[in-house]
Each structure stands twice: as structure tokens, then as C-alpha cells.
Image (cartoon, rainbow, N blue to C red; front, side, top):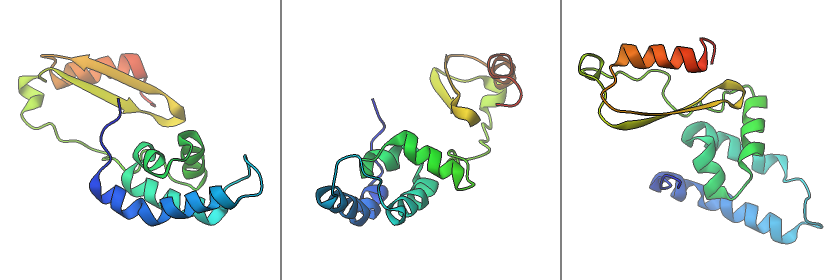
Length: 133
């Protein structure tokens, strides 16, 4: 199940979504490449809102968008934070939660934890993920 599309993304994406739909209706044959200008706008949007939500709202292929974003010199995860301060959770431990991490080269890690302290979580991630991601 996907997270809901943020309202600002849905509103911002409307004009581009309409132009992509128009291109689909007027293209000569199914499977033709989407124009570079439309991809460029989708990439800008993905940098701000993330690849998954952007691909869903624009109804374009996630893998193609991610590949183009990465080829454009940006990480596919640029939309998210690079550092998250867990504050008091470091000492007290994490309550029941799910932690999902997308790494470079398309790897994914999903952890369901309860009562795990942050140093222990980091150790588990290093064992499961490796130090490079």
C-alpha cells in the first residue's frame, strides 16, 4: 500500500500530468519515447518530492524515472533527508516502528523493530547492509 500523495505534489503536478496525457493521446504509436522536455520536468519534480510519489501522480514508469534522475547526476533519494536526529529515542529505544531504507544501486532494507536502542539499530544495519550502502 502506497502512502498518500502530498497535496502540494498533486497540485503542482497537474499541468505536467495533463501534458503527458495529451502526448499519450497524440503519439504516433504506443511505446514511443516520451519527449525529453517532459522527462526533464518530471526529474525536477522527483528531486523535490521523491521518485515514487512523482511516478505515481504523473502515471509514468518508476524505474525509468529513477534511472533518468540518477543519470542526471542526482541520487534517487535526494528528496529525503540525509540525517535524521532521533533525539531521546537514542537513549530510550524505538517503539514499534518500520524503518525502510533505499540504498544506492537499488538495494532496499526494511526493518520492523520494537524496543531497539539506536546504537543496536545501527549495528544491525551495518551487519545487514554493509558500511557502503
